Amino acid sequence: MLSLEENPIIAAVHTKDDFTEAIQSQLNVIFMMNGNIMTLHEYAKEAHNNGKKIFVHADMTEGIAKDNYGIGFIAKMGADGIISTRGNIIKMAKEWKLKTVQRIFIIDFHSMNTAIDSIKSQTPDMIEVMPGVVPKVISYFNKHANMPIITGGLIETKQEIITALKAGATAVSTSNKKLWYD
View 1 (spheres, rainbow, N blue to C red):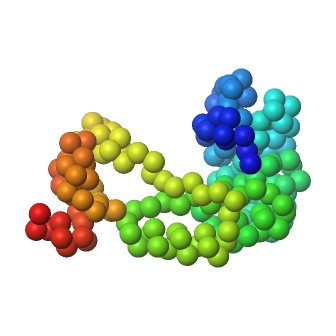
View 2: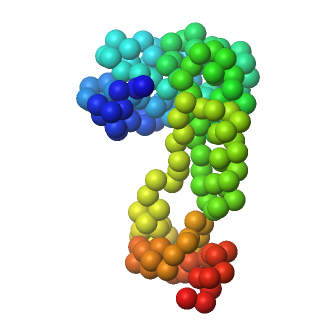
View 3: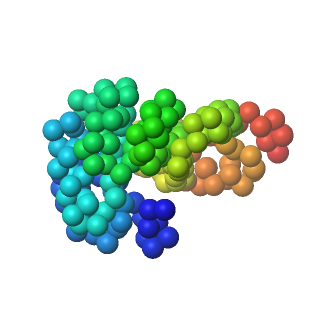
């Protein structure tokens, strides 16, 4: 669909320098994580001139309304697709024939079930599940925050608790009652 089989890494860019480096890379897809109404066409044109697909984070692009006309503007500026956490944005983008990535933040089992319901009703082309690397996040906060770290969400096994503790968590919260007694 997006040449992800050829190269499964996507460049998530935040700055012009990031964008320039992504253009020069061998990656096939760029996620513009921010930007504005004034630079959108320039970025899309440069990406296409270099054989890249470009997806615009519709929720974070400045100057673009989060309505049908705003999504239409993104399409007219040459974006290949959009990224959004919002189901209504996904639906509008599909109407404009844009490819869609629904970004989902998972914090617990309830958020997983809510996400499944949302993607079933919105039918994005792809989903981006975040965070991607929880032990790494725990380690980062352990290193940079001078306080105890409690982690929680999606904990199902004693091994997951051990992994979180080894990564630097002080404690693990869980609603999984069987783990309260292990």
